[in-house]
Image (tube, rainbow, N blue to C red; front, side, top):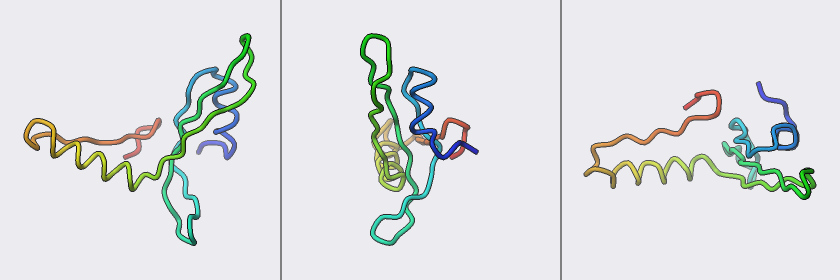
Length: 87
């Protein structure tokens, strides 16, 4: 699996945005499946910070289903894959 601190190390080592493998995070006592997109903030060629967007995958799934229904009169299927190809 992915290192627990990939959200920190990935953008600093690759110098590119990283999509983190899905993980569970407790919100209001419930385990919620999440992912993060993390960007390196660079000044003069050096990473000085990481900026991240955390995404609730249940919400993303709902958006993708709505998009699937609206594209080509519902004749499409939208799938979301993790960086390693997991659905």
